[in-house]
Structures are given as C-alpha cells and as structure tokens.
Amino acid sequence: MEIIADILLAAGALGAGFYCLVLSRRLKRFNDLEKGVGGAVAVLSAQVDDLNKSLQSAQQVSDGSSKALQQLTGRAETVAQRLELMMASMHDIPEAGPAAPAGKPPAEDDAMAAAYEADSQPSGEEQDEAKPSGLMFVRHNRSQNRVA
Image (cartoon, rainbow, N blue to C red; front, side, top):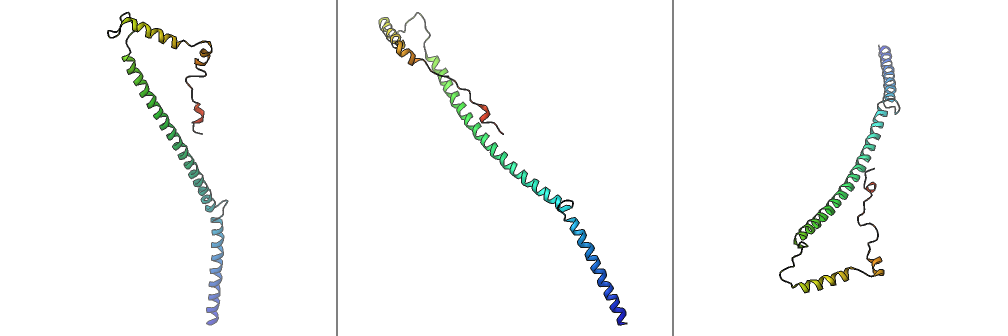
C-alpha cells in the first residue's frame, strides 16, 4: 500500500511540475516586450510620456502668447486713450476764419503769427535736422510672436 501511495505522490509531483512549466512559458509569452501585453504596456507608457511633454510645451507657448496678447492689448488701450485725447483737443482749436478772437487786438495777432512762422521755418542746415528720419510707424514682425 505504501508503494502505491508513493507512486501516486510522485505522479502528483510530476504533474504539478509539468503544470508549473506550462504556466511559466505562458507568462513569458504574456510579458514579452515585442509581442505580448508587456510590449503594449511599454508602448502606451512611452506615448503617455510624449503626450505629457507636448502638453507642457503647448502650455508654455500658450502662456507666452497670452502674455504677448495682454501687452499688445495694453498698448492698444494706451494709444486709443491718446487718440481720444487728441480728438477731444481738436474740438478746442478755433476754426481758421476771417474773424479774429474778441479778446486780442488784430495787431497782436499779426505779430504772434509772424513770430510763429519765423520759428516754424528753419534755416537750410536746420531743415535737414528738422525732417524726420526713418519711419514714423513701424510694422511689427508677426513671425516672432507666432506659435511653432
């Protein structure tokens, strides 16, 4: 009876060993980096890392664009305020016409006009210096602020 029990025990041990061998081969194929699920997990992990990097760079670019847009908006508001002030001051300038203002005698107006014209007409050397050099308005290069 003991011999039969020992034979059955040995057969069970051999069956368990064979079962473990089959399971280890299946697990190796399952975790194979090229064909199995391990490879798919590795590829997905690399893609997640790439997406995180591209998301961070997109956030940096959008932050830079937002700051540039805020600066340009601030400059535009400042220029708009200046233009509004200039337009408002244009309403205060009297229209040029034959009638002289009531508070000043005509002789004083003529003297002031002659002095103004003399000051506003520079001599030959001063004319070269008085002319504006370069552009009055500058177009900004838009390619510097563009998103890559």
